[in-house]
Length: 209
Image 1: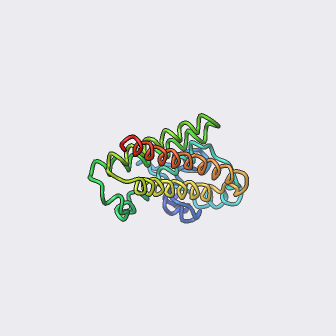
Image 2: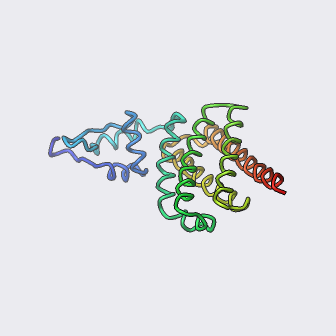
Image 3: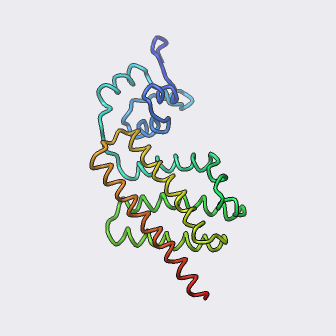
């Protein structure tokens, strides 16, 4: 690398672009942002190339649902690992195995959303309702009542929504039809999960009276 060229590492490039480092990594891996590799395989960016790319190439764009979901999944893992879960009253009632199951359910929710974004109509509804049944079954196994189980689901739904919004903001997807379609699908998917969760709890209670 020439000594007179200003080189940036991943974090410095992200700071210059005003986005999260994982977004820079995503753009680099998809070939959208010029990137160079050191002998040790570390990413390096020419400041001049980044600045030029900012002026000419960084236009509002759409990205594939799979890319959105994978990037959002990374954000979800970060937020779940930050200690937010430990502050939830319902989570404090769980043993270690149950806590692991709920963390895994959060990742499963994101994968289910990926399938929903790629499908339409009855198929998406059926998958959402299946998730609702699984959340209800998990809640009962963990001795949560229907309110606590719903609170648990809302916690993961909100993290999911925040992660999706952050990805759309960082990748500069226009806040028009694309945003509206994404929000509609997320809410439709998660609403069906919540309805199924509550209906399943009610069915369990009716069967044990």
